Image (cartoon, rainbow, N blue to C red; front, top):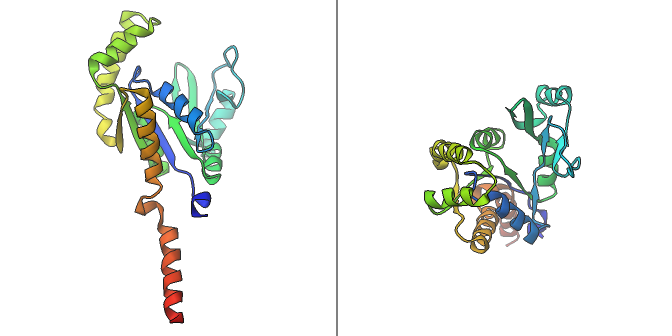
Length: 214
């Protein structure tokens, strides 16, 4: 009964470009659709072919987005190439209230902003087993020039400095094992003492009540 009533955990997943975090998230959600929800970002960029409102993004005008900022309706937001991207607070809080563990896939600066707003946020950082493997994966995509790949590797050097701000390191060397490890880490968090204050108070009260009956 208690498991059914538990509140969801907010999880931020970050990682180097090429770490495989996107594939990892898709596999986790496919295996446990009733357990996890992937947070949907709001953006001011135009929808691309095939994208749908409320599936890939919540598409907003600049005026609508800036109104969301002013009203505190975003947990975090950033601006990239003249467009805003942000995490709507209402969507996240509604999914957490449903008992789902909500996953945000964002970069380090956004992750730290989320933790400021939600101190109990679980931060996970995804990395390949070696830097050489990271470069190999980027090259293996076959979709980017060597200049872009070098830029991504330089960015990875900067991001690596922030890894120790996270709670867990997820080494993505084998997809099957990695999904199992991530699922186990997240579900184990539900049993952390700090997340079970209400239950502990309840059982203490019950014990005191039973003691009085003796």
